[in-house]
Length: 237
Image 1 (cartoon, rainbow, N blue to C red):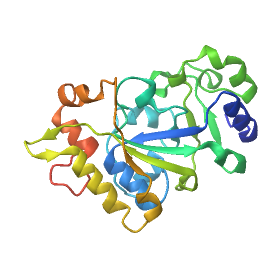
Image 2 (tube, rainbow, N blue to C red):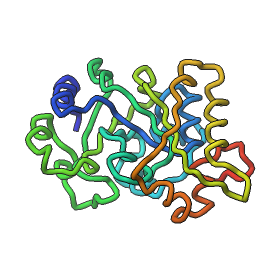
Image 3 (cartoon, helix red, strand yellow):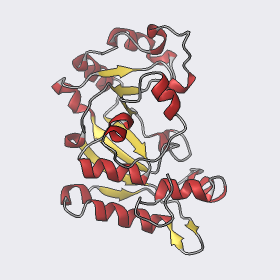
């Protein structure tokens, strides 16, 4: 259900929320950079552009969120002491795009992967900012998923402040540094746009399990999917 953007902006400011975040794989992030904005997975598919697979894809199609863009009110790779499960490239946006009121924002009550067809619409989404405000503490942060409903175009880069790349500190196939490959690819993708290149930063973590997870928990084929550009010979979807 569409929320009032002005009221939502006011609520977020009161809650101390200053930014939205979207994480994805390097290859998908490069598509966003080339298209000059975030795109829904449905729009990427319709335009026959590059994106890596996600485990939630079937659920997204089944529950009619395939054409929506998901954004978080926290950097989940800081909120939890681990890597973001959706990918190592994070786009960070200020929330002031809400003041223009040209995008429909819906907020879920849980991740759609936990939905079922018995749920009513009101069980899936907050119906108003008033309900969201009243129930804010009743729903964990990760369950309140903010979505841009069917934008049908690239969005939000006018409010983009940072592009943050994880540093996994892992080499694959003996000599391929994931950090170097990913950073090189981001710089190549932004070579014609200095304003984007200048906001690329490398994440350096302390007291986080991401390095250990990247090294010991994530299979090489997943690291290839997450960190390599589509033109790399070892890339996989």
